[in-house]
Image 1 (cartoon, rainbow, N blue to C red):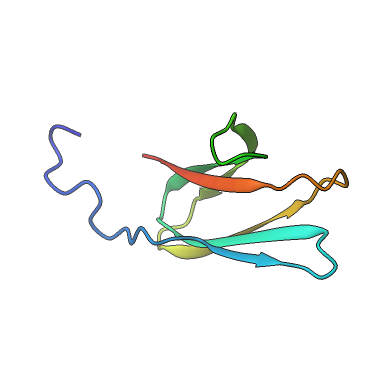
Image 2 (cartoon, helix red, strand yellow; image 1 turned 60 degrees about the vertical axis):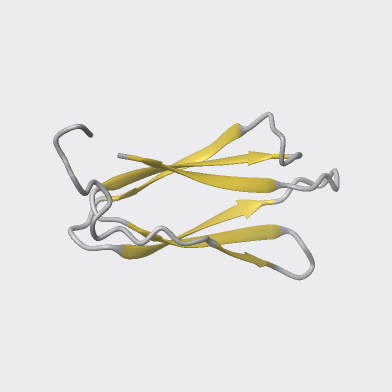
Length: 88
């Protein structure tokens, strides 16, 4: 914001980890979440969208922590792409 000269101090923004299960029935996403921060996790069958809300994740703790969520894959065989949005 305008009054914060370093709005992302203490937040390491790295690519999330992605893990699948075998057989491929679930996707597991993992990332370092900042304390007191809300994330919006979205998915799409195409990297170009349209994007749909999968869920929100909130790290309500006072320290950064590893966030992990699981998504059950659809049975229609369509691919799923994910994106994680940081909501300050």
